[in-house]
Image (cartoon, rainbow, N blue to C red):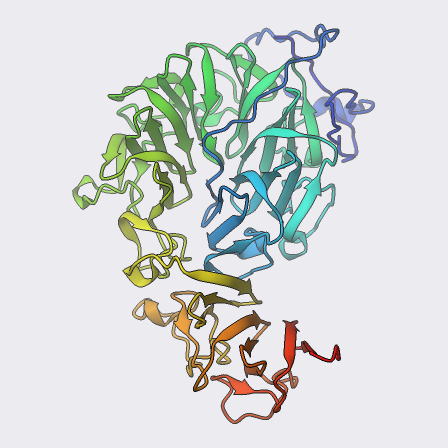
Length: 568
């Protein structure tokens, strides 16, 4: 495989991704640029400085069909269903759920109105490929990891709370999100990375924070088939199954001894030809599945995440011995999991919050060898910082581990509500899974949903009575996790008869229509947004006497509605 050593501009002009991936240039090179280039260590890495034969177009890369896209960020999960609709739950800091929410939520409609083929999560950012193979990203873009070409100074200004189109016109096959950088393989086999470049993890020949890339930037090479973006390193597979890594080489992350860092791809020797890198990202441990279904891991290993029976770093790709041929492997920041061809699941690494899912606390906080999680036949899993989620072959999604931001998705949250074994997502308070929801809507700090029986349920912040259950108290102390916000949906106190047909949460208030055409509001009324004077804003109160309301919408502290004559 021929690899060209790309040079970087002195300014931060992004190299944008086109539809074909060719023709991308990085401009002229200055003396300052040359001082920023990597030497890739003391040994000859064998890199060819020519671009290689480009007369024949590279083959089209097949999008990875399995897993379909369940993803985990640090404290957040998102999952597309068979129709491409995205459901997210857990933390929502900096817009990482993509639906405008900023407070942790139970499972809710992420990115409403858009349909997705696959999704990948970093620490505080998310990217997804839609059904047309176009790329969208959202969340924290402070280091360029969203890839929209915008430079931001502070975290809040950098938050993209809804999806932003990236590299319009390009079609994408694979994605991987690192801690603060992102990478993807386009359908034509070209590889692109963007975001922070402190250790050269972008792979374009530059290194250092002055060379963060705000837009997708080409990584030289012939044809790439897969990529894994780690904490601050990157690894990728070429069309022959060869392994290449670059970025931070500390703790063995590159799988090559004697290299501290490299800003261009370096070939990694040792494993047999590989067919797939780990799903997930943001880990300093990397794993891959070979063509013969064997599993190989290397890198930082203080939590035992390499799974090779020790806690020392693993500087070279080393085989992880399991009882079955491996189908997929999933490497998160502290925990690694693998699914075999017959649906058995093993996890190893940090189990400090129950993420090993083995129901056995005698193992301590870590395991440097795989621990089997029994009781289900698994299709795929993903790993966050302190939790794990997986989907069974029957389509059921379960999560386990830490639950302080509601990332388990069972309707509870708090430091005392972690789960030591797989728990069904949507099983409110440990009860049966609610499967009769009709519609849902997300406000500033709370959400509401209608059930098929016409009942209305809300969850989230309750300080102004916006949940409509007569309660405005909120106690988020560790001794009272059930009293905190964003725990379980609570039924809104209904009027004496009829059913709800539409509910819209605003900033700190909620309004809803009944099937008799009446309009009811509750919650904060500091700006007159309830449309009436009520002595108790914690329960629904009818707005006027009209019974011909047909539609409503709420902003932060404003309410609008349409009545049957067409008046607004």
